[in-house]
Every structure is written in C-alpha cells, then in structure tokens.
Length: 202
Image (cartoon, rainbow, N blue to C red; front, side):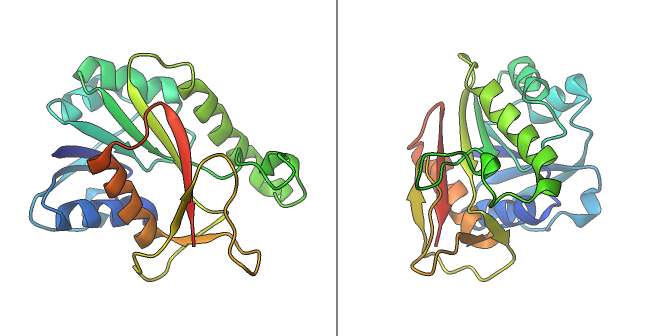
C-alpha cells in the first residue's frame, strides 16, 4: 500500500515508518523536520505542517491510508478535513490511554493513576477520540497504547484488547514503540477494526 505517516520523525512515528517500509509498503513520511525521518527504500520524507490543511491534502493525495502519530494539539477535524480533500478514506490514529477503563470501568483520566500534569494532554486525546466517534465518512481507528509507552525491543509478542487497560501479571501496563508499530502495521494490512478503538500491551 501507499501510506502517509504524519509525525513520522517522532518516537512512535519513526518506528511505524520503519515497520511499514520493512513490509514493502510505500511510505510518504511527513514531519516538520524531515531530516529526522528514518531513511529506507520506499520512504519519501516530506516537510509538512499538518495545520496547513490544503498543503497536507496535496501531500497525502493518492495514498490508501494515513497513519497519525501526532500529538493531540492537532484537532481531529483538521486531519479529517485534509483526508476528505485528498480523497483518502482511511485514518489510523496513534491514540492515548487516558480514555481506557480500569477494572472498575472508570476512565484512567478519572483515577489516581493519571498524574495531574498529564491530564491536559490526556484530555486532548480523549477529545480527539470522541470527535472521531462522530465521523461517519472516513474509516478511522483509534489505537490506544499501554499506559507506559516506551523505548524498548521489538519482540513481536503482545496482547490486544478493546476498551479496558491491559496489564501484565505484575500489574504493569507497558508496550514498546517498536512492538506498537508491528500491531499498527498489522491493523493496516488486516483492517480488523473499523470506527472503533483497540489497545495493546505486553
């Protein structure tokens, strides 16, 4: 497939770019600083400002899907507008964990597990997710990582879930950027989810 990756120079985005390229996909890798995008066969690094909807639409036109690894200071409406203009019908979003539920069906943002200083960006992620849930045209998916989203090895071993936070036997909720990228590429290829959220952890 031909896939646009937005935020391609970040920790999650760069791993997604590498994973897609390793599988033979064509990647339009968009970032403000394209020099930081991983280089590989099939990867075209593009300087872009995702808040410039018209320019972004031109950059992603002709892609089969777009994957967002952006922070949530970019509104969902901005990305959805660009996809519509570009006639790209599919959006996969690197989500957040704050709206996942704990064992008592409480959102993490509403529990003591969420540090106060994390809550503004966490709420922005929740707002993004809720905005997607109103979208009826673009085929979207919101892929929430584990609570601890960290640098680490590519193991290929992880579990997938839906609305509840996944934890290991010690109570830790963790996933590496590299293993997250595997699952994101799997989702792109399998299209197992449509207009819904899923999650991942070890």
